[in-house]
Image (cartoon, rainbow, N blue to C red; front, side, top):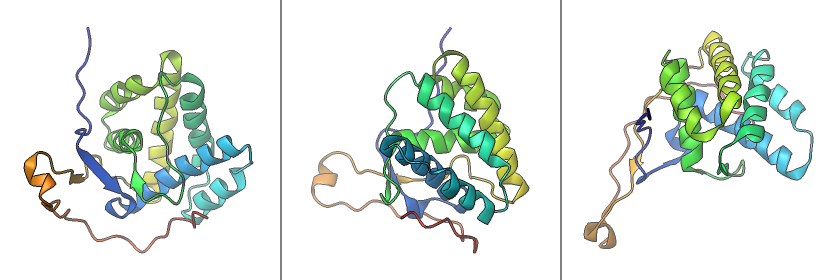
Length: 182
């Protein structure tokens, strides 16, 4: 029997400034890892430095396991943007929602979402590593909002006449920093 999972409407967009600190760090980690893979460079030291700056070096092993399971068991191409790109892809939104669901103790939802992106045993490995990562983030008070409201892309004739996108109400950000994405 299939499952219906609605994580993010197709007509939603996000930019980095819409995200909280935990989500920005998570996305920076994902983008850094993928950029290193694509350019055949070792980025472990950058990722470790980013995790150390947030007092969660123990998350490195779980993060690497998560990314390896996505890279080796992806059911389809996954759209991960470059580090300095401010727009967030729909696949990145799915990963962020998945991370938030796991942090909110909604593991069945997180596993169902991972199943849309990852085949077979890779899904279980990814879920286990994502759980360990979210636990590490929580130990440093970096808790993602599982279903943060994002901007809606206007549809129909009003969109063509220059209708504006409703403003997103954001929570105040904490004083922590995401590592430089150079």
